[in-house]
Length: 495
Ligand code: GLU
Image (tube, rainbow, N blue to C red; front, side, top):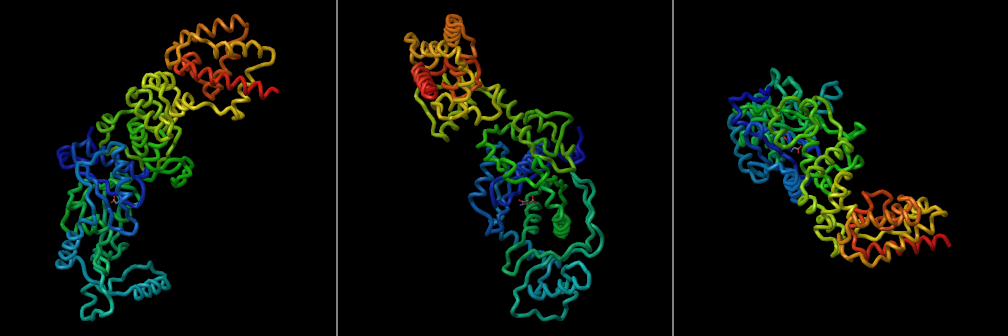
């Protein structure tokens, strides 16, 4: 399939970048941007560069950089180059500023902040849009003596005439009049370069061919293009991705659920599922909802990018995750289960890998997240809290008065069975099933009357996979203990 964004003959030159500012965790919007830049580079066998835009020293932290690197590693979005840090490139920015000053593309401006405030105020009272009036442009300031008390900034000399026009990969043609654009400050009075300027120098030096980023940067693009042109650089193609909103259409925030990549891990989502789900936020390939990374790379050619904001739908993410849980191999699920039980400091010697895999086999089709898998293991590993009203109510509704003596006799029987080996998986589901069938026919009760209290007392839940299979995983001593506590509690409650 040919792409509007890349001429096939140029595909070897595709270089994309992800350029986060390390001011917080890697949030889902940033991760989606990274994913699209990564997939695009992979599709065209290009290079994907990671650049950390850390020039805002007050807001940038090493922890945030680490969170970004960790988040990308978790999503398996490996960079071919970088991370490059803007703070390590200050000499280069100074060099380019000196070059622009020498070439007349930039000039010193000595206007003080107070003076600029007054200028804007006047413009406002005149009904004009506040903007720098070019008072220190060399042709205007000829003969002016720079005030000794003011340290100058450096401004880019923006073209006066014409339009900046670009074909956005997402939004189509965008055209901004130069008359709308100020002479941007590219170096502050302390000599430090400003954000838009650093981005241009980096995109140029890193030979970025496609800038894929959030559409909160659309306003920066014409300014960056003008600086780039002044530097004689070849313009990259730009693609500005619409925002990701919450399911209510509002700006995404924590109240919608997880928003940081690491939080998705904590909540039990599989990286491949998150990648699959994120790919569909603002991009589509026909009606395909479930696809592999390889499919994504094969399909992601810069077309079919959506113009409108997408909405994060956690139910759909859980559905996608469920699909990946079904496909996951046992070793992966076992590793994840162990990791998550460690977080919860829950362990038991009897819960061998064999027992854990038996549980995984039983529940993997009924869970949406890895945390739910850990919840199931906890149902096995932790004695149910018999003071929990849900348990009392669940048992009471199953233990009807007329059947009570028979059910209790059965449970007592199971509790006291001596032939059962005291090790997990020593008593097979078939053994248990046979035993239960014999008991219900001997005592003339119905299966749920026996199975439901057992579920509540042994696992703290009213619904589980087949109770015989569940019980076959527990050591008999645990079954006996839990039934004994359950019966005692029930009798106590009846008194
Ligand atoms: N550092 C910017 C951000 O985190 C991205 C800049 C860009 O992609 O050009 O929003």
